[in-house]
Length: 499
Image 1 (cartoon, rainbow, N blue to C red):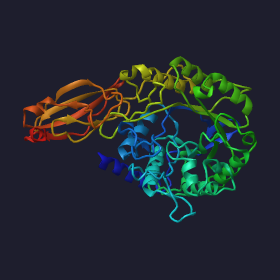
Image 2 (image 1 turned 90 degrees about the vertical axis):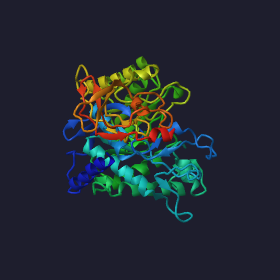
Image 3 (image 1 turned 30 degrees about the horizontal axis):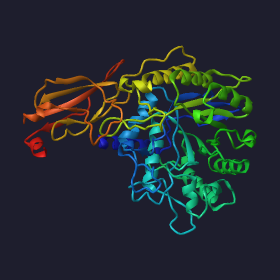
Image 4 (image 1 turned 120 degrees about the vertical axis):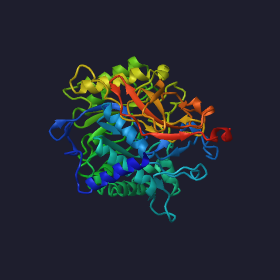
């Protein structure tokens, strides 16, 4: 199926190289509102940080990372990116903010990690884009365009989780604090990264990033809480000079940069709500809207890790609260994780909060996390933004992708976008009669570890050597998918020799 997806993207390249877009317009701003052409544009959804880089929690922390907490990361496959974006858009998401570009750390090589931004080739030189990483980024943008998803793309992190300002500063013998000084070597390198990314030509669409209508906005960075007026002003001016048709988000955190409210190069003010900061409540929406006073658009870039009733009150404020006639244009609940290439879901613990990431369309296995209730809340807020009283039913799931059958009859498959349960069918090769092996299989197991867990094992492998064919159908409340691809399997003594 990887071949099939590659063909899809090859076809996408042929179409888009002629400058044919899925979108008619760039998203624009007038005062406190965003527009898609003449239509007001607002959004609400789950925050999907990893459309371009995956934290693989199943592998735990890397022992070779001297920081003691460094994790394992990898690039998503084509199938994974396609699956996640389809799950988002088919569940009502029209915009998405992802996480930052990652910066190289000295222990990355020992941990088998790659990053988006590599150290300079020569001492004191400019950082380099990792071409392999950026091709994954290209694919994310191309698929977002294909499936009508607008993107908010932040540049650099205040924090060190993925490698951020401190790692960038280390290239030049400076500190993380120097990142915010516009006369520092680190800031010069930051501007170089911005220019290198915005002027990059997408290897799939043939367009420069500044020409991509799927890119709604560039964000100065993630939670840049030490931002100064000089820092934001210089950065926003640089972005606008390179991408005049795309919007700029001030990535400040916990406060509003006063000068950004009158800066012609800043379009969107953002804030993140978390209980540790004392701002995780609907009053923050009202306070921020009052401070902005309609001069810029306003988004809640992240919030969550709360009981569902409190999450609902904030969501309702984001969607409906008006201050002097001005409302937020959007908000995202932290955070989403998607299907694995060969089965199950990625997952992420939120520290010691007890909360995990959310999966679409929501599964009863995550009852402690109130996953289904949170997904229903998100979809209801999306409907409310459209003036609807209730969310429409989910579309019928797309087909799952069945992987080669394991030696002992292990069934591995990539779950369908919006599939809740699955029916696995088997037939003797050459027969027209399919037999159901299981009708209500879920792939929603929490903390799925591909080295340990198997979605399903056909017990016939223990004693049979006939040739069989398998397929899978995804099911949700709206119906059944088309059958998956077919995989053929025969024991032929392989299972006994493997065990």
